[in-house]
Length: 189
Image (cartoon, helix red, strand yellow):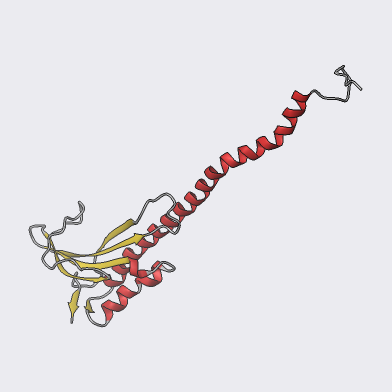
């Protein structure tokens, strides 16, 4: 029996049948090509959102520690200061505080406008050296005043470092004026 290729015939030529049959395979190939890009976008947006959230917590930690310290006229180096620095773990939660270096320093500005470190305390890192010169932002170098400098550095390791970014050091600092009537904060033993 011979097949007819006449119009209206129910038989399709092999070339059309082959094209129709490969149409479903074409969708699978397109999906296989686009899947890595979709995964990259999804996982990349997750990592970016996580880093942005942590950066916000780093900013908040520096601000919170400096804000708490500015409320004191005199602060104990052995009893109150460790509690204040350890409060940073609550701000950084759920991220481990072990990856953070939190530093709070009292900056004295002399009559010439030279800013130096009067005292400094740190959690998980080295404090600033006493007497170290500090470059202040314009407008903050008012002679014969003091400032509190809160700093936080966080070593962020992405959960799924599929882009091989490595460790990102997130940093924030904030200057605040002491609230005591003396205009400075004394660090006691």
